[in-house]
Each structure stands twice: as C-alpha cells, then as structure tokens.
Length: 257
Image 1: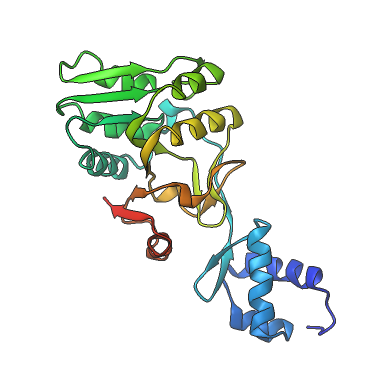
Image 2: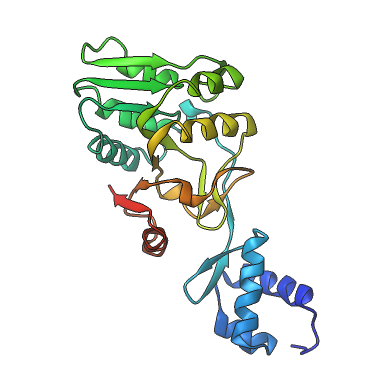
C-alpha cells in the first residue's frame, strides 16, 4: 500500500481492513501500511478515542454496537441461567443490616430474589419488579423512589426520581447496564433513564455492576459513566478473560458467577 497516505486515509483503511478480518494486530498494520509500530499504535489509539474500534492486547477488534434493548418482560428469559448465578453471587456481597440501592433490569431483579431471606436490610429502588419481590417481608424495609413510570422497563425515572435520590445514601448500589466497554465506559440506549442511573451511581459508597457476557465489549448511544466509576463487576464465565484482566488492572474487582 502507498507510503503517502495521510493519517486520516490510513485510519479509514485500517477500519475497513479490521471489519473484513475481525481482528487486526499492530504487526499487520506495520506490514500493510509500511509504518512504524509507534505510528500503528497511535492510529489505533486515535480510533479508540473516536469510538471506532476496541483495543485488545497486540491489536484491535471491531467495536460492537449493543442492539436496542427489548422491554423487560421480553428479555427476562435471555441468558436466564447466567443472570440467576449473577444474582446469587451478588446477593452474597450484601451484609445483613446493609442499606442497598437496587436499580432496574432483569439481572438486578435476580439479585432481589436472592435477598428475600436476608435480615435487617433497607432496600431503596426505582424498580417495580424489585418492589414486588421484596415488599411485605418482615426483615426488609423498602423505600420506593417515585417518578415517571417507564412501562417498558417497569421502573421510575426522571426529575422526581432524581430529586428523591439526592436525599438518600446507600452502602452499596447494585445496577445493571445496557453496554459495557473499556474505552467507552457504561452506556445506555435511552437518555432519560441514563440521567436517573447517573443519580443512582452517586447515591452509594460502593458501585456494583451486574452484567452478563452479552453486555460486555459493546457500546450504546448515551454515556452513563466511565468504566472507572464502578468498584465491582459481577459477570459470568463467558465474559472474555482479556476483558476481565483489563478491568482488574485498572482496579475494578471482577467476580465471575
């Protein structure tokens, strides 16, 4: 290939080559475009910053867009076994007497199911399924966050919810996400919910994200928070070890259910 490509042209060709091959190493870029390793790495970092690819050890893979999220009742059975294990493992991180904040979503609902026998818990939530699961239990106090009801997610969002969140504090926040990526962080596909989820993240001393492998290395429309905003990720064994190791390297605890 020509030695006289501009950096923009070269990066455009790198993306095309990556999409054809599915994976591209630094060495292949050096050979294909007749550039130095430093230039090849610089091109990859530029493309990462522009949200065009996912950096992996020694090269890059295409950045996978998360599909639109189905309503909660339609996705309840997707990866149900993994979600159940994640729910049980996450519940084990909660101590009797804790105050916890549970967000919305199918995986968080599994956490709630696993908490029904606990003692002395205070649970704050904007999720109707969580309210239904934990209400009426003598040893669990439930605080419901009101707001605008989002039918597809069976959750409360918006200004009223966020105002209520500013008045509470939890030992642990347990939240699900639509997409999870090292460079692009936590992303969702519905902006109004993203604003509420940001308020949820700030309401606890420890942030635990629960996400099965289908959410990993994907990106959606709206930025929720950088990856470093979380303390613990609970996921399943199908999540790539490379991703788990990269999270551990930046100080995020990773627990495989």
